Amino acid sequence: MNKSTVSVWKGSDPDYCETAPFHPGEAFPELELPYTSSERNMAYEGVREAFRLAGLDKARSGTPDWNPLEEYIKPGDVVLLKPNLVKEYHPRDPRGWRYVLTHGSIIRAVADYVFKALKGSGMIILGDAPQTDSSFDKISSLLQLKSIQGFYHMHGYNFELVDFRKEEWTNEGDVIVERRKLKGDPNGYVAFDLADRSEFATHRGAGNYYGADYDARVVNEHHNEFKNEYLISGSAIKCDVYFNLPKLKTHKKAGVTINLKNLVGVNGDKNWLPHHREGSPCQGGDQFPDQKFSNQSERWIVNSFKRFALKNSRFGPRLMKALRPLGERIFGATEKKIRSGNWHGNDTVWRMSLDLNKIVMYGNMNGTFRESAPENRKRYLCLVDGIIAGDGNGPMNPDPYHAGLVIFGADPVVVDAVGATLMGFDISKLPIVRRAFDTIYYKLTEVKSGEINILSNKILWNKRLVDVCPEDTENFRPHFGWKGSIESHREKSHSRSRVTKANEMRSA
Image (cartoon, rainbow, N blue to C red; front, side, top):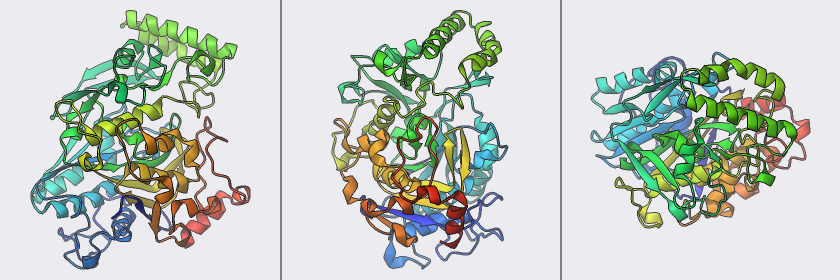
């Protein structure tokens, strides 16, 4: 499979299999574990068809010997499956996790074909670092990951679940009230300093970055005029193959979250990650889009309380929790007001995301880097769960978008370009995609956007990416902070309702 090629399968009546360990709905000839389910497993069907559309092991397709991942995965390899396990909770829908998290049925289908390629040796690590105030146990329960693990262990396969975080928080009312130490990654952590090879090398944000915690001193200690440093899970560096399994969603800070943004989950300490710069653009920041009095007042008041919370760890967080509802009444709720870099002017998150991809592709376990050349990159595969995707206020509070998509490729930049385009967005307006084609020093791809080809069961998409008409793509709504800034030009977009789109999807 050429890295400039992406396969896209689109199914009708999108839904997920409910019963773990998510056996396929029919006895495909290549299956090594002869189990099927009476329940339709659309994810398994989509994964299999995405591999077939890509032309993997084409000569043996449809036979018991078909081994689609054999080209990429060798016996004895350690393969990291990296899903999006960000949060077990959706603020409006008890079943909203289905369009926030990578579904367990996607994980099971991919793992089956990985194990076939491993031929009885090697292992799979399923790992991620969810949001720090998430429960890995609750996420595992929702996705029934322990059932998948138990099924593989019963058949002698090495399949391990790993929470990459070093710490878990209890968050009450968006205020951290408790912190607990975790075991972390059994392969440890590696500190990488990209220095002037970072995408932040040309960025004047030193001393003004904000990370994942109240204490902005931490993120600014690791990102300044002398260094750009990240703490990465050892499993993401040590593995032979990095297999990204993101969810197809919109994102408040990056516009979209597909493969490139999904690498936030390989971090041991997310407070090393710059999320935005404080202030408005005229102050050198991207926290707010303008310098309104209300924004400046909010910034001063919130920073004052954060400083108080840092000095008074016992009472400070609880005081912030008590005052938060009052703050929302005065300044507006985050789901309605742009703050914290949640808009199209965020010039920080795309840089951090691309840096993480550089590290995973080129990093060594001793914190050094391989030479920047295609042959030196880690083997990197991507399969996107877009069966029930998320649009609107993603990534944590999206609405469901029943896209019925599974997208596969061997280049994360190329796959993200295809995914974002098919969502209905203009990749030239999405820095996380546009800038990935031309990174500083460590190249993430050799492919140019005009060279990308799609292989799809939907005829209107079975062509070069640049030839896909905007009116033939999906109609994802961006986060409100990105609305009007990233959508593709659609002459027919206003006349094509979501109902029309749903009907088209059923007949595809």
